[in-house]
Image (cartoon, rainbow, N blue to C red):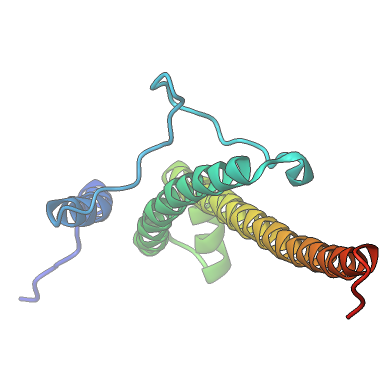
Length: 194
């Protein structure tokens, strides 16, 4: 007699769901918790800031912006990875549900496919997958935007630094020229030509 290893529908979904929780617990046990949501100076959860007009910022403000956007990038990237794991679990659940439900439907291939697509259990599991996938896509966009903000702010700091070096060098050369002219003029006014 052949043994049937087919798992109950709800039990299988529960097994898939526990995979991401167990993985997260294993990572936390390593001492590597997720980055926390940045907070305001008052300790309240903050909202992600917009990139201000960088041309109006001082060097100290630019340095602060880099730290703020880096903190938000770390947090968003952690959430992105977390929801990618959730989406992977939901994809496995959706694939299992499709196979399980299709196996229990009668009719032609097209009939079985149509019956599964309209089965409320599959619709709910597919909805959960789509929800997780949409969050992953949103977080990917946000993470890329935050990375661009950090890079843009860094470039502005670099340009400011180069500008100060060039202007400082120019001012130094102007002072040197002035000193040379005044040294020469001093010798003529004292009647001593070089």
